[in-house]
Image (cartoon, rainbow, N blue to C red):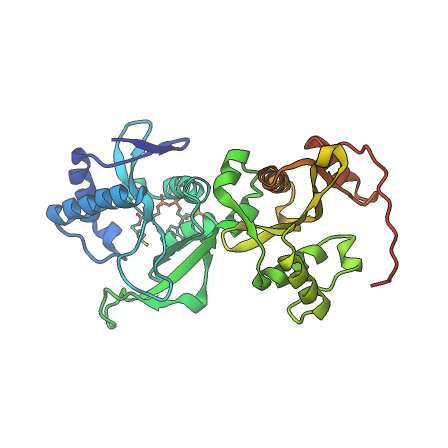
Length: 349
Ligand SMILES: CC(C)(COP(=O)(O)OP(=O)(O)OC[C@H]1O[C@@H](n2cnc3c(N)ncnc32)[C@H](O)[C@@H]1OP(=O)(O)O)[C@@H](O)C(=O)NCCC(=O)NCCS
């Protein structure tokens, strides 16, 4: 048996043989079964637990047995599973719960599922978690609401494993994306967690609308950029020039599939410092809603790692003097304002 998560009042753990009987009693309680296709026998529960164990072995996560810390009573399950049916939203990872009716209405499902959701996004790094139930299961829908999943009316579906005229066939789908979870929590992940959540890569032309939107999502940028998908051709031309330049690297930072940061790197071969290579870092942006979460620092470290692997020994950037906080940010990362940056603008854009 392994403990996966602990909350204030609960332990979420893997399954033991001794769980089969109490879980069967839960499965056979008519109150519990009101909105579930019946799992009426001990053997059906045993088979379900065997399936959960296989799921854990195969995927590294599953529905977990929920135990009260105070008495060590096993009161049901809360956890994650990959549904075995095909629907418009599959493949996906579902969060689900089933607790003994004697323990309802004490916030246990909410407490356990919040911990599972955090685990799903922050430890497993899942892009999205869904939940579904029949419209009449208001308790379950309330738990979905309380932990931050959002009902998506466009995603209502008929459960493919039930006949169309079955009273439980109609289902509502709730969804939550990792990016929205982070925003919802106002989460400030540890740098270690950022390594699991974020990735960086070279930008492609398809990324251009999001990059331009990021450049525009900025006090100074607003005055000089144009956002939107109807492109200013100069952006496209500039992108192609950057792409062709072997010393240039336009980096994007992704959370799931969403671009939440960008910076433009240029390797500058130079004669000074005995023929050193410099890395110029410019156009640094993190989306406003993701600022102050350590993402900018993570991105600059990616930029420095890129420079290191390309032989750079001097890292330089300019930041507008109006950006007081940005200067402090770079100083925290070890940059020093040793030079006066000077610019000559010869054309108005
Ligand atoms: C769904 C279930 C796990 C909830 O467990 P729980 O520990 O009672 O849940 P919580 O106490 O954390 O939260 C339940 C919420 O639903 C609300 N609720 C309960 N019954 C309700 C009803 N009939 N109508 C509206 N809201 C209801 C509660 O008031 C509470 O919300 P609140 O905190 O805002 O007051 C439990 O009812 C259960 O095991 N049901 C049977 C199995 C099942 O249906 N599983 C889900 C299949 S999708």
